[in-house]
Length: 265
View 1: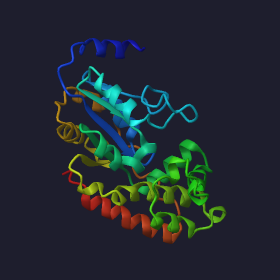
View 2: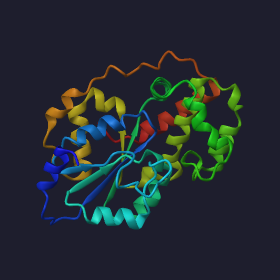
View 3: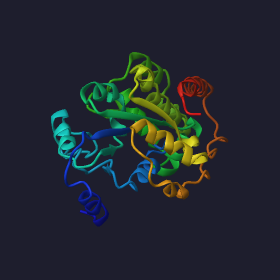
View 4: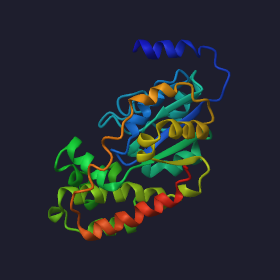
C-alpha cells in the first residue's frame, strides 16, 4: 500500500457516513485520467485504479471489468472514505444498470471533441487501435465490452463500413461515436445523478470546472491549487485530420447533441 493512500485512510478510521460512489465514464482519451488524478489529491476521496484494483479483482483475464454488484457493494460499504471514485470506462455501456443498483452512485460522463480523441487514441495506443476497438463489434463478440449492450442502430452503422477499408482516424472517430452514443441510448441525459463534463472546459477553466464537479458530488473543493498542473496544449491537435464524410457528419451531429445537454456555464 502506498504511503499517501495509507495516510489518507488514517483520516477516516471511524466511519460515520454513507459513502458516495463516483464513476468517471465515457470514451477513452477524454480526460478521465487527468480528472481522476486531480480527485486523488483530495484527502477525502479514495481513487481506485482503472485496472488491477480491488474493484476488478474477479476479472482474472483482462483485469479491467468491474466485480459483481455484490462484491462492489461490499467494498463500498466497508470504505472509510466519504467518497470513492473509479473510472470504469469499459463499463460505460452499463451506466444505467449501475445507477439503478447503487443508491449513492453518481456518474460523471466526460467527453472531448471527436477529432482530438481520434488523434490522441492513435498517438497513445497505435495506428491500428481504432480498428482493434471496432473489430469486436463487427464480430458481434458477446464477451467483449466494446460490443456489449449496443443498440441495433449502433451495430448497423458500424457494419455499414468495411473495416479493412477504414482509415485509422476514421476507425478511431467511429469508435468515439459508438461510446458516446451510449449516453443517449441509456437516456442518461434524463438522470439527475449524471453530469456531463467537457474536456475542453476542464483544461480551459479548471477551477470553475472542478468546483462544478464538486458541487455535483456534494462535497467541498479543498485543493484548488492542484488544478495548476492542467494545461490546454492538447486542445485542437486533431483538427487537421481528414475523415470519411459520413463518419464526420455522424460525429458532428452527436457532438452537437451532447453539447446541447451540457449544463456547465
